[in-house]
Figure 1 (cartoon, rainbow, N blue to C red):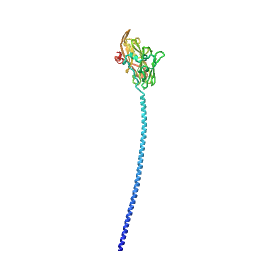
Figure 2 (cartoon, one colour):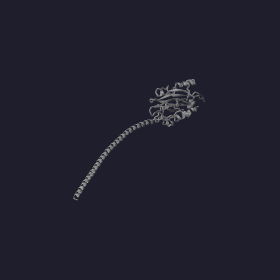
Figure 3 (cartoon, helix red, strand yellow):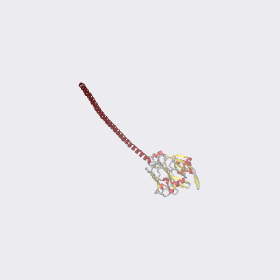
Figure 4 (cartoon, one colour):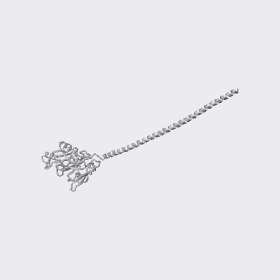
Length: 336
């Protein structure tokens, strides 16, 4: 019985020892697991920290790239601004230009005498001097040289007793016509048109005398600017009744059978047209109160190669284009 009790006690001690080993192992495994979990957590935290650093680095790179792009964009924007500025300046230059004024072919709707009455300062206000636009509205604030600024046509009294005209162009250069006689039955019609399409008007100034036979044109010149910016006058007929286009003078002599200088034919009208300078000639006769009209019309074409080149002379500035009945119908329909 005693031996049995001893065996049971040994068994209990063995079991306790076995259980103690089990507890010790479990605790060790638990502690190892905790340590492993801690190590894993530390590793995960290290990985997270590294990923965060990498992300921050990548994010930093992105910001730097973005900054670089913004800088490039700003540079491009600056270049664009300069380009816009240059374009704006170019547009400003274009804005400074305009189509020059046009006032021509006045006899398309009016009789010659009505044109003289309406468009000559001498008939409106004989002693007037100054801006002729103050007397005749169609001459007010006209841009003759296509720079977008009005050019003033001034009438002045000459020491000789006559009246002349001066134009100072806003783009440079000037015209001074010299004096015209200013009897009550006289006056100057001024027309302008860009005949050679260089954005600068040619200007025609025709002096008229209203005679008993009808209007008579003389002392007439066309003014033009050459490529160097100089203005010159090219006479068609001067104050002494000299014709400056020889072929025109020859035509009159052939048609009349006598030289123009021996028996001047009446130049009833001189008009600026889109095609050139048109001239209406009366080959008719006047005998006392009796008068017969016999009209011919011719066209003189300015030689702009010579005029613009600055090599035209007073004698070769116009080419004679011949006579045609169609010119009368086109340019003086009221007179037919």
